[in-house]
Image (cartoon, rainbow, N blue to C red):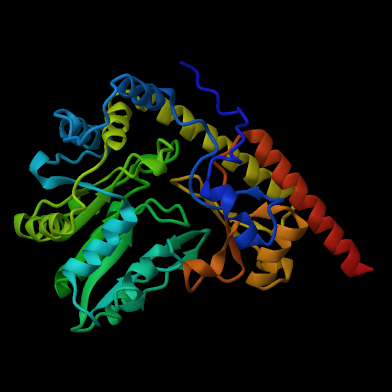
Length: 397
């Protein structure tokens, strides 16, 4: 089946975060929203059809996990990530970010230190600071157009109070698919200092065509297997984040008991009818859609890259290896981050994430979501080119 990613779908009036929060974030509703990380593509028909089929039954009662849920999930992980996961290692999780908060709460104590690698997905900061833990930055460095880890700094930041490392694998917002060698070096430091790792791998299924495959951190060594809490989800890749369907994978029985026990005590260890139904549909029928979607997103990335190179060379994109998010270096436009954000919003009519919300290293940057129809990309970049041309002319004048 050939899927249509060119379809323009109106999202106003659907309580979509991407639309409803524009006024508060950008000072106007009149922007093309290219910020929050969901897609403007139709959620795949096999998901919608599965939900419709379930709705043919007139009772939406309490629901147990479908019998094939974990079989399908573990087969998907084996087929796509070469990781043989046992079913007993896996549990349902009501979202990746709640999972991060649960991990912080049950695996650390107040005032323990937790390392993150900014610029990085900003809820990493919130779940640490909102739970009265100490946030420690190991800032990534840009080298030849991609992010790399400063492992010397990482090790220097470790103290006897450092208990956890929250890892973004693949990385958001930089789109890095970390190499096995990088992961091995990182793992050696974590093992040396006995740092438990929480690996957010929500973008694992979004590695773009012709890129290095994703490597789950837990597969690097026997030590990482026993000391890593991995979070995965179909919600990002299949555009159904509103259904809140994620999973944890914890091979270590004691660590798993600790985490699962915390979820059970919090009454947060079960999903709902539609999250189960949709996830089963994804893992049964989703592969062809996933491939076509990633090819389309790659086309948008290529379009963006070429447009900026030829028309707006002041903006330099970090080309992602995974995901539909592009990190834009706008330093050459001569504006600080707040000015950039305001210019893009009010002058160019584009709603992008402000780089500084991702922490140190986000200055002079914006994050753009390119999971949209090509016409939307063309319109957005046309507006941006026109706004920059107008600003240059007025400045020269």
